[in-house]
Image (cartoon, rainbow, N blue to C red; front, side):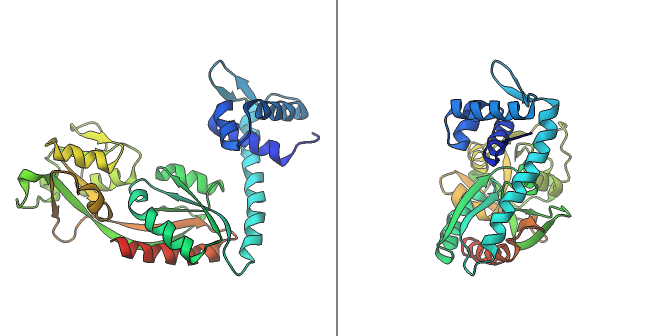
Length: 298
């Protein structure tokens, strides 16, 4: 194998991730023909095809699957070399890739980014908002530096730092304002509106209500807390939302709020990063900024 370049490996990784030449080219900030040419040259160097080309999408060959795993390790090691150099500086600077789950992002990110930019003006902050399983995979593979998620993650290779805890709040139609707050058992008999599968907040709500995740009961699923609250306002059912979302999501909805008796349902939010990350000391410092940002919001 000759003349394989780091740039070609990054283009390969982009194409393997997106499964589409156009999207991979956009993500790599090059033209589609240029990316196609680089992939072709890489396959010629290897003497074998890495992708099966279909009419609408592409997929990895058997060799491509094995090659992809090695490429991720190589690119992660290369990125960590840059992190090692950054970690040696007194001032935190350069790219910082932060992952965050959707039930946190809209409510904390504006404050967090502002506070981090003031505390570390040389940082180039990149945000990735998606579900916890995806963030964990991307963190493990080195595609993000840290993630803000609900704990515990229970990943042996990660450091977990708890930042704060917050209660869940019951959202009901405005007509039910002042009514007694239902118990977890009573709540399980109501029409409970939840986030769609894959959201950890859904699992936490189901756990509090002592419900399983199977299709036993009629429930409506949504992709955002905003949709849930608006459906409650339309009289469709009730829902739970985290404390940090209350002021944003209920200001324009005809709903009432109720807080549960002790002990209320709650979650712990924290930051996680790889134990091997050269930026571990800096990420610990950043976690303190995030903690103070959350205090200003909650």
